[in-house]
Image (cartoon, rainbow, N blue to C red; front, side):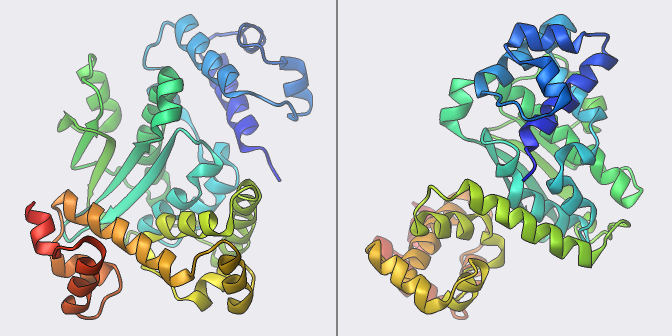
Length: 335
């Protein structure tokens, strides 16, 4: 399997060259074996070394917005298989959804969340707080990069300059004109997460490079890479991660989830029983978490949340939520 982090580091060094920096010096300052990296790419790079590389690149280039400018120049090819999946997706919405599903192959600093509403859709980068607190400089640079990268790469896929309706960042920016130029938005405010909000008309915009057969192959390969990363997780943890990452698809049946994990429903049931849980309990747990999240956000009517979570009748959702929490969805939302 390809090492996406090494590929990304090589692209960062390539951008540093454009800024008249020596990649060899950057690697030496960051404790990375440059010649081994250049010759084979099979060099283990620690999170601290990546953090140091970003700090040195920003310092030597005298560019505190290094991540923002790097994101402006980055190409989808730099993301390896994740970039290929994006290029071969059918629509903008599908491309973003797949990118969110596999972003953990690129970084563990944050998660990518994509939500669609009646008038708009939003792309959020949500911090893994432990990792972000450990490497705050790296987190900010990577999140800046990812925010601008999503915007600029969509242009090439649909041959149109897409402009966000609004942008939020989890800090007060000091260079407002530069952020407005790069993000093409004058409505930039401060909130908890990095968020790009787009008009809903872009959601179904077709991607001109789509190749459905190739996409199917790439998705299988990416899923295999995800499974490799998750081998140290329990079956319960892997299923919960999958359900949360694919919440936009609703909660699948036991048969559907077993098919996704390349096993039989009976075998999956046995493995979960060994871990002291049933699939129904996991599904209810995820539904409860998602229901509380959607209700707390205040962005969705209770009836819409019921539909999102797979309930055909609002009364069934109300009964389930009261069983989980002891109160009704309406009372919980008001509270």
